Length: 141
Image 1 (cartoon, rainbow, N blue to C red):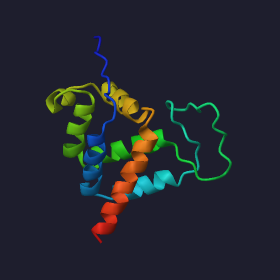
Image 2: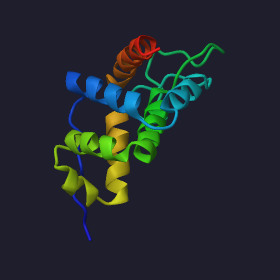
Image 3: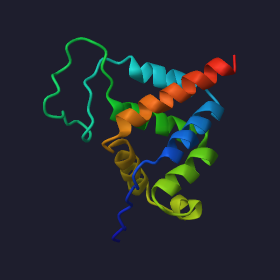
Image 4: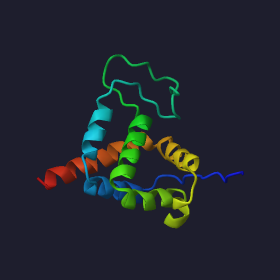
C-alpha cells in the first residue's frame, strides 16, 4: 500500500498565537518540558535533524538549544496533554480537516511534525512563542 506524502505548510503569524494558547491552557506542566529541553547542552540545529548549519561553531560549552528536538518534545507532550487542541492545529499545518488528520498513518504524522520543526524559521518562532508565554504567565500571576 502506497501512502500519500503529507506536506506541512509554512508557519504563519496565526500559528504563534494558536500554539501559545494551546500551551498556556495545556494540562500538565508543558512549561517544564520546554524548560528541561532548553537546559540540555546541545548544539543549534536549524536545517534538519542532526545537521549542523555551515558557519556555526560546535558547542563551546555554553547553553545552546537544539530547536528541532525541543519542538518535537513540545509537540509530542501536547499530543499527550492537549490532543483535542493540538490535532486541529496539526491538521491545519497539513492543510487538511481534523477528521482527515485522524486517519493518517503514524509515519505520516511523524513526518509532518518533523517538517514543522525542520522549517528554517522554527528557532525564531519558538523564541517569539516563549516571549508570549512568559508575558502570559507573568500577567496571570
